[in-house]
Length: 306
Ligand code: GLV
Image (tube, rainbow, N blue to C red):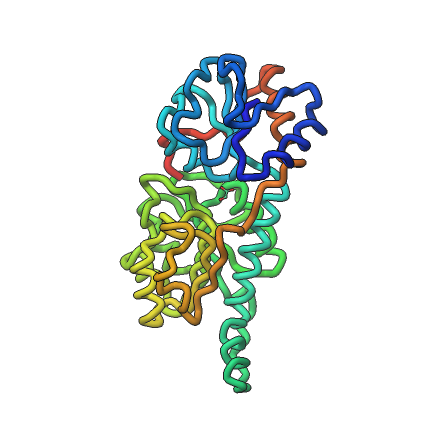
């Protein structure tokens, strides 16, 4: 196993040892003979990493998103790429989105301003069932979020490009239903991957489809949102608030006006992280299943869109 991690190499090596004691883990760049490597677990691979990996059978992504892999020059096109799906990563993402949905729905951002101004005034309290949360990106993370939102009685709708869904939520599909989805959404949650099709999917025109006074939560990728258009929508009051964990440029440049916007809540791409212990169990199970003739789980389908 070749490991190029997110700066937690030793934690990953220990976790692999716990789950697969016989596995040889080689930590980039000390990879020994590249032709002996048949699996890789990667985050942000540098150009050239794939050189000489002629026996590579599978690539696991450390993150739920695989854009850093797909952007890497030299990525072997025929080797399956497996998305990270592990319960702690999913739970962290659900917590992050739920926290901000509750913040905006219960107008905590406005009470926070009241507190700063030592001003006391009741604001309207809208029941959760009258608040529609629209989720773009109805994969593992979106589906887990739906469950928790439903338990709090929110109305939830989902959007994906192709037909699908597990029947637990009203779904909108394709370009034809995108406008209807946006027009019904009060709090828009982005959990989409960054692809050519999703770049700037949230822009002046699409923000204009949300009802006035909506909110945006972006826990997917910064490239999904045109930040200039987002700022204009916030400044005009069309959008009442945004919670952003990801940005077009990371770290967010010092000069970005987003830092100072009173109704924008920023975090430095920390919505959720992968936990090595459960991730290594997922990898071990996937490898075992594959060896016993099953297909890889959560294999990334290139050019599938979202
Ligand atoms: C984080 O951004 C991830 O892809 O898991």
